[in-house]
Amino acid sequence: MAEKVAGKLSLLSLTGMVVGSMVGAGIFNLPGRFATATGPFGAIIAWLIAGTGMYMLARVFQALAERRPDIDAGVFAYAKAGFGDYMGFLSAFGYWLGSCLGNVFYWVLIGSTLGRFFPEIFGDGSTLIAIAVSLVGVWAFHFMILRGVEQAASINTVVTFAKIVPLIVAVLGFIVFFKYDQFAENFFGGVGMPEKSLVAQVRDTMLITVFVFIGIEGASVYSRFAEKRSDVGSATILGFVGVTGLMVAVTLLPYATAPRAAIAGVANPSLAGALELAVGHWGAVLISIGVLVSVLGAYLAWSLICAEVLFAAAKSSDMPRLFAAQNRNRVPANALWLTNIVVSLFIVSTYWSRDAFNFMLDMTSVTSLLPYLLVAGYGILLARSGAGYETAPRERGRDQIFAWIAVVYTLFMFVAAGLKYVLLVAVLFVPGTILYVWARREQNARLFTPVELIVFLITLVAGAIGTYGLLTGLITP
Image 1 (cartoon, rainbow, N blue to C red):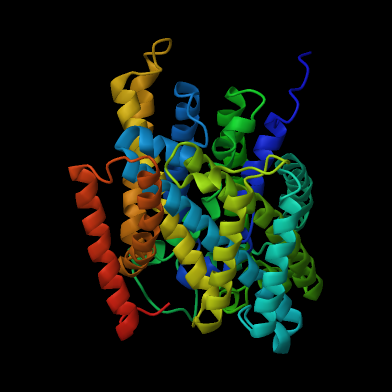
Image 2: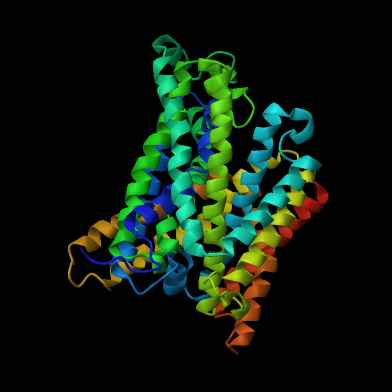
């Protein structure tokens, strides 16, 4: 048997990174978010669309890991390889920013979960006390991660197994109390819910499906730590299949235990309320504990990913070299500091948000779409060029089809998100370009090619419109 490479992650650990990144906050909010939007029929259609699109994206990540083993920290590096320096930067910055927003969402969810038991103190997760607790948590994790990436990844693997248990118990509870008549009543919409078209129902579920699939690229981001390069693609597919089955079960089974209107009306995390409707108060307590364990584990994984993306971008000169520094434990310390400063600022900003919970969820989803779109686009370019397919030329056509479907899916997600969130993302991208200018000046390199300048100007105009909307109240967070 081959000796294990010191400081490297095994297939199990990489799969744990994928599962740990995906099974975080989103899965615990599926019942309420779906019940608000649609019944089981619409939910099945939504999962078919989301599952197909994300499976194709997973296959793109797998193909790129196999065909371009020289590219590490996959997400932004693929965009740069296919579309140039500025698009690579936007991918890196967008992915990093989306990860930061996702980490903020985790702390809001922790606050809202505690608010179920201490409503006057934590409320919906955006009270002053909830914000203070969140800030303490952010910096406690910060100093733990500074002690070492491999140590933190090992903790994540343990936490991943621990947080799956409440979800399995919930699924079993829903199966035991499954009522066919109730499921049939809810199937096409249920009683006491507003009428809307099937298209509108499915569209309203799309952002939550994007959110729960974020993390599918966890193994790709940490490819430089893999014992074997082939494990990156295997971990991506294994994590995707297992988590997708769990998410579909958590979404559909509650419809068979209570009226849709009752499920839609429960507080966040909605899985706790849905299970309480089925089995009683102990179900809410169990899921609430599971939420806290799950979210803390997912936060750990995403803190690692945030820092790793900035570090890798700085190593390839797409971010200022300041963020390429590592401490003696091989942790990208400066990248981690910037990440947690930004996360802390966003946490403070939730105090003024009307609905911090859903706003942060939707912003995280939309911000992640651009990196996914560019990865899928590069999958098309690579398959068309034939580079890396010398030993498997017959797979080019298949991989190109996978990549085209992933492109169409991500474009559809942008449309489903709506103009508001696209403009708000542009508002954040415009000042972020300062980092790109900084990095280019360090290299004495040209800022933009003609095409990149057009992309920047479009981003600038969209950001200006978004800023105007925020200042005038036309756009509300």
